[in-house]
Length: 71
Image 1: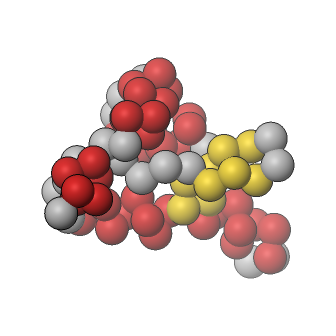
Image 2 (image 1 turned 90 degrees about the vertical axis):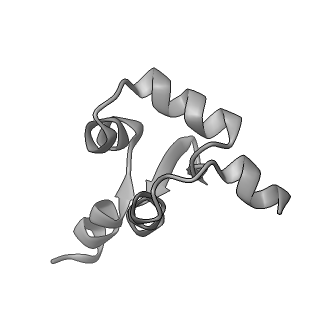
């Protein structure tokens, strides 16, 4: 796999995350903006989520990150 393809596989767009979570892109933005899911990484004008971060969040049962930060 080329470095570009590997990086693309590691970083997910809002559309990719919506497919992964089976919801709308608008819902993804609401979750991220409210702090209930991991925030995206800024890459210039793009916003991408790290696949490993989302998979870890899913494995933990999708905890509300607002509450986790308060502890």
